[in-house]
Length: 307
Image (cartoon, rainbow, N blue to C red; front, top):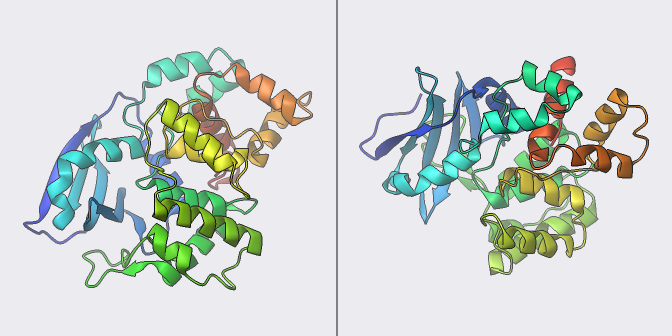
């Protein structure tokens, strides 16, 4: 799948089983940015840039099913040890599934969902900026629609990869500066959303906002920063918190799929405030509750719902 090169390094990434690898791949496959990412024969692939070096990342489940194997090709392979943590976060390998499932299973509805999908994780993101772009584009747009528009952004502002070792990986995602400056006329988004996207890209490019943060006070501050920006609402921030900042209790309360499914299960949940009260019982793992509820719709429809 990838050409063998001396510029290559691999690491085993352990996790606590169970781990639903196929659902993780399904989630990424439904949202992958054409040219930047690919899922091929059970392997996740993407172009990456890290600490000024570029290359290709591949992640696969080990035959023993007790760890993932991350392989980095190209000059970025020199940073393999520093990449272990961000890749582990991307695939939610630090999760404690027994604790999460035990907590959520107190609720009979979620107990039935957890039983059907043991080892369900919250898919992360390799790049916080990339996920922010995806999330802003995805405001009030279907998963498929958002994926199409993000692909157009890459074509307009991304960097082509000459002689890529993987046919599907011909682009790197746009830098914040490139996306802030590019002409996005007729990209397929409302003008206000284009303004929001480029405003955030400019803030990241200038250093005003740093999206790669850890838990705690930094996340709380970043939530406030983004919410203060025009065009950024609670749904956007909570979805970013789920996937980019690894907040296990992030809850995109106004997500229409979540709200509709919760109301279908309990018709007394007639407004957002009641949905929020119901979700309080799922703390401190509401992000995982969201994944289970989204997946329940995906199972019925045969599609990737949510986010």
